[in-house]
Image (cartoon, rainbow, N blue to C red):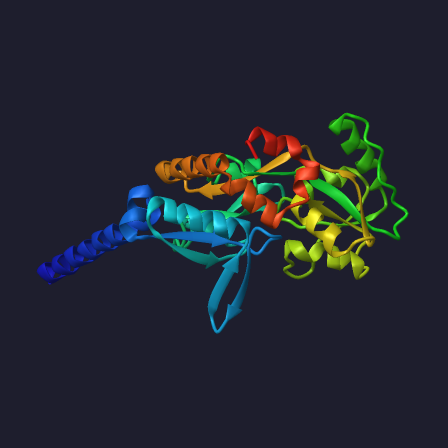
Length: 308
């Protein structure tokens, strides 16, 4: 009986080691492992013109600025490209192997999950809590969070003071008693901007909502105003001309970048080198003009610095 138990114990130990060895590469897949696998797995969330996709018969067809960036990067390192659809609540788990969300002003960790991607790229804003989970690439798009209202709202756009700090204070003062739509776990999370002290009636969607649904929601009278970041605002102003207005900033200037696992420094550095290359050869500015032509009017200095 003892010999039988010993045999079973040894078998269990062997299977445990074999399982560990088989899954370890999924958690430590850096540049060399990506090249060996022959494919770059791009985790993307539908958002503005960064990522959009359609699901036809279970097959996803993706397009957008970040899709083209990652397709170009895959070609740059000599591998195929694969798009991996995701959501804000699952993306970091798909990249790091452990579920994590930002709720009640702190990171809340969940279960271990299977790693299914090598990079998150969909116009992700660099935020302090996200930097605890991933390492961001060099930034490639400017942003900020603004308060946007319906045109029939009595809210009046502030007059810029020349000080972003004072402008934020002015906008927050206008929010008192107003219905403001926001979204947790994104750059529109009200906890990030201490909106609880403004006296605003912060409305969080009762159902899962996409970032590009915020403006349609206020036009549908779900709220008088909404938090909105720069890329979505630029698209909304073009899509609904005369129906919305920008009241002013809620955040300091922000930046967007791609997120990599902390144990994949070589893959991240390879992307930074690729990004530097396409900025120099004009590919980058061509992509920005294709997907966000109006951004040059608002952030010309940012793109001049990059040689665009």
